[in-house]
Image 1 (cartoon, helix red, strand yellow):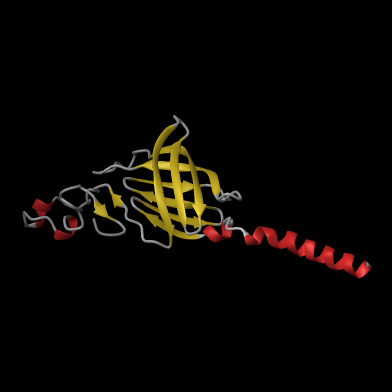
Image 2 (cartoon, one colour):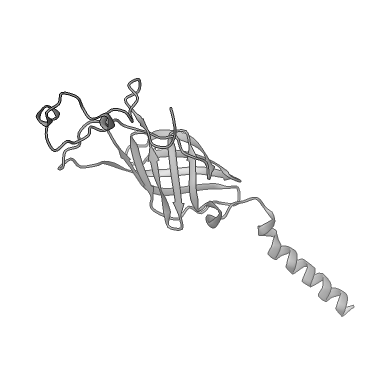
Length: 176
């Protein structure tokens, strides 16, 4: 009888230990790496993450730890970007943000909200390991001298060709 009790106790202990491993709930380690989607690129590290958006970028400043149902909520920063020249003394348009979402296998939904005004930015769908399709704001190329002073009236083609005349954006991770 003692042997039967020990066998049951061992089986029950093994089942309790294996229970968390049986579910599909992701762990922080499962999330590490690159995630991509339309208008967003996310790189998750053990300490948080970095993001690239259309005309913005951000950081997640704490580890992403999903709950058993896959949801997470992490603090970070969201920085708006703009096209055209950027003055050397121009401060970044930086805002505290919450990055909330849900992970289901290799798919993630991510919602970005600015916390200094409770402004909802957007919700994104990402896939682990997928390429991102981010279109950065048109950036003015800085020349050492005005093109007219270079002896030609044409701008170098590298300054124009990466950009779409239709959107004023260039693709940082794929085609339009």
